[in-house]
Length: 193
Image 1: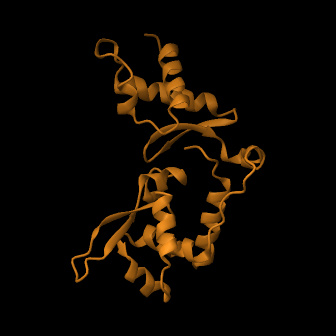
Image 2 (image 1 turned 90 degrees about the horizontal axis):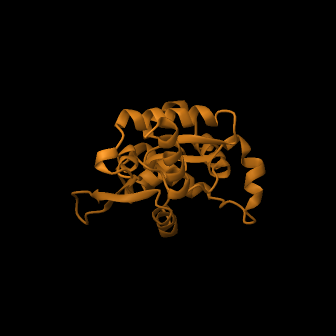
Image 3 (image 1 turned 180 degrees about the vertical axis):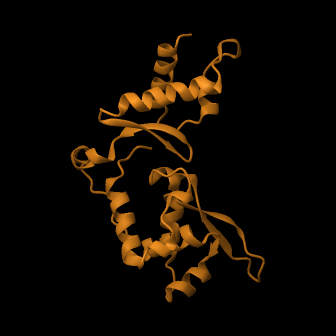
């Protein structure tokens, strides 16, 4: 198989998948006797990335693999295709999410202790339904409260490969700046998944 054909197959798979694909998943598209090497897959992905530089889409690597998406710089125009407005999230939800992101694993009681107010059940429910957080385990204390942590869906939604790409907590002066960062990401991110 030539390089152009390999690149076309990968591009078609990424467009059709509706979710990020790993290199392992891309390799599984091919029969064992005609399977390209991991390096050939990476080379084809790099070529696609370079080809998209001057176009309205980009090849993006996120936590769950690779995906083709509309460039974020085009969001003001492309977002008009959807009639509904992006969800607006309360300050309480964003503060809760930020605490989970930066202090995971963390219990609800620990979140409440930091925030100084109780955490609404609907906030935790929303974060779980969005699949941005998950129950990562249970703390070994009486009552065994749930420990919350982020998911790969959270990373994918915010175009992150890992939590290491987030700014250090010390760089963020207050929760207002965290709220702004999340609001910007939420409003810019197009429904790609």
